[in-house]
Image (cartoon, rainbow, N blue to C red; front, side):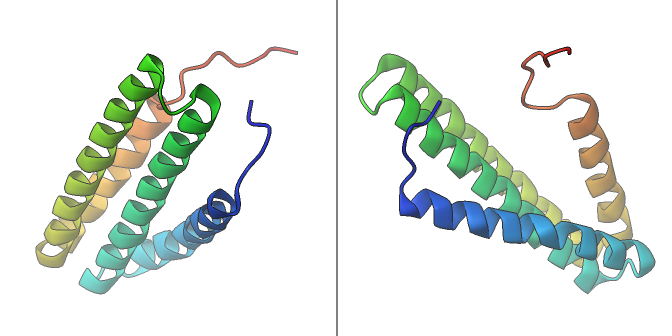
Length: 128
């Protein structure tokens, strides 16, 4: 849907992909050694990945819909709300990981299971 992408979005997309590629390594570290450092590092990278995903979605919505559109303004409010909620929730999990790494490990596992069964993108898939 986007005809042209600026350099800033490409740079943030590469940063998003780097953080996304770190998640399997940090997951393995966290599962083999559920220490405070492992769970906190996973939480930080997980938070940065989710925030970058939200920001990239926001920038693409603005590019497609235009900046001064009622739908664009509504989507901006929704995405900013999701951004703040994601940041606060992940910061709480990072603080919890500092004090209770084992319990927070299960919380991150529950987040992944919930995200698998109830994804944000609910568009129907094409059947071939």
